[in-house]
Amino acid sequence: MNYIGVDLGGTNISVGLVNEKGKVLERLCVPTLIERGNAAVIEDIKSLCEKLIAASKDKIKSIGIGTPGLVNRTKGEVVLASNLKFENINIKEELGSFAGIDIYVENDANCAAFAEYIFGAAKGHKNSITITLGTGVGGGVIINGKIFTGSFFGGTEIGHMAIVVNGEECTCGRRGCWEAYASATALIRDTRGVAARYPNSAIFNKVGGDIKQIDAKLAFETADEGDEKMIEIIEKYHKYLAVGIANLINIFEPEIVVIGGGISSRGNKLIKPVAAHVDKMVFGGNKTKLAVAKLGNDAGIIGAAMLCKE
Amino acid sequence: MNYIGVDLGGTNISVGLVNEKGKVLERLCVPTLIERGNAAVIEDIKSLCEKLIAASKDKIKSIGIGTPGLVNRTKGEVVLASNLKFENINIKEELGSFAGIDIYVENDANCAAFAEYIFGAAKGHKNSITITLGTGVGGGVIINGKIFTGSFFGGTEIGHMAIVVNGEECTCGRRGCWEAYASATALIRDTRGVAARYPNSAIFNKVGGDIKQIDAKLAFETADEGDEKMIEIIEKYHKYLAVGIANLINIFEPEIVVIGGGISSRGNKLIKPVAAHVDKMVFGGNKTKLAVAKLGNDAGIIGAAMLCKE
Image (cartoon, rainbow over all chains, first blue to last red; front, side, top):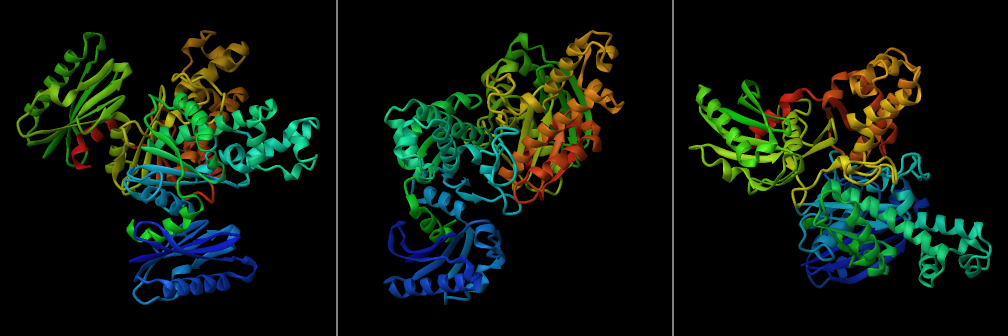
């Protein structure tokens, strides 16, 4: 038996044929091109799924779709996904029927968390949280082996937990959200700030003064090379990342917190300093493990494919 | 059928005979006197329960004990309760057997939350959070009608969620915990600060300069009378209380958040301004209700008595 997982993003639609063991056997990808409207996007999803169904040697059990935004999983509807310009779009209905194949729709961060629980870094841990550090800070919470969604499908917006009242501006319009400190975007903002303030700094010189070229990778790299200003920025980043993780542990006390997103490729260079902060911050002693994600960019596809197993 | 609930506190042991409808039919109370040691405290619980069993016209179904601290509910053991000086004390075993009566042990904030769910302000809402504003900020989370405890019985330490990195000192040794802003203790600290800084202030005059007399009730009262300095303090208190509640909604998205503890007796004078802040702070629009607790000081006894129904 095989499974199809769809990772619907603002930039690409990635679709994968996944086997029982979570291996992606085949994958297809097309640009989302949101400006075409949601009907064209859903039409593409449909035709990609049909191609994979035709390509699969084994029977397809189900199709799962992971999408950004607020998802009514019961109805299979995207209630609101601003970056897709989807509002009250019932993907499940619009896709129509594939004979004998069940369709599931879920938030993409929840799919990634479910994938890490089933096949990845959180395997064997019925209570886990997977956070994704990227443009924002996303999160999925698994409680007792199930995706936790809150009462109205809008829970686990962990990136918008305030950690500094009146702090840094967040894209949501508030100030002081965790996302405004722990996202890759926040790290890039602070690093560009250093470059702008210190035109003799290592980071400024690396990009020849073209500050917009600075990304998270360069920020870490420059700190790794021993630049004091960047070491300070990275230490601050680790600390604020830890504050939010410690809050989540104080609240959920999961068995494991998994960190995903591009930044997690740093592995122990990220986990060790963050875990040291977290251990000092958790009330009554920390028993929760911290680890980097294992499934990388495939987590979305794999988690969506496995939704039927939830 | 009747039930016995025990509210074991640092000051008093309160025991109640509770009927099927959550009514406390009879209650007994003795001072805890922790310095006697845990065996004497447990002996008192036992003898109070025996008195209520004898007094009950109906059969007793179960005894539930609510205690501060970290509780291993599976074993019936208090893992650690600093203010009781209990460490690895198995209350269930120490109590011995009461013929045909089951014994349950649970954290007291969880008992209060369960009581508000079964008979109080959260009745009918399978996902609810009850927070208690007192010396600290305690909380109990009900998910799908069950008490949520985390993986190692130490979850929902919501008072120790950091909301201001490097902020006010907390009793836990960290800085910036929600408790350091939203507890009655925090309000009293800030109010005494005003009195100390302004010897001509209304609050200073009310206590004849004896600042230690200032309590939360007086703080609210003076603001209600129109004193500008105290209005400012209360507005700040409401805002920081709202920050933590909004964080919990962004994370759990319960159907209702219930506020208990002495401060909740203000009713709408508390709920209205706090809800106005919360509505502005929740990501993607707030759907969660906010209400004051209904069961007051009885919540602990009632919730403990009803643990067998969980």
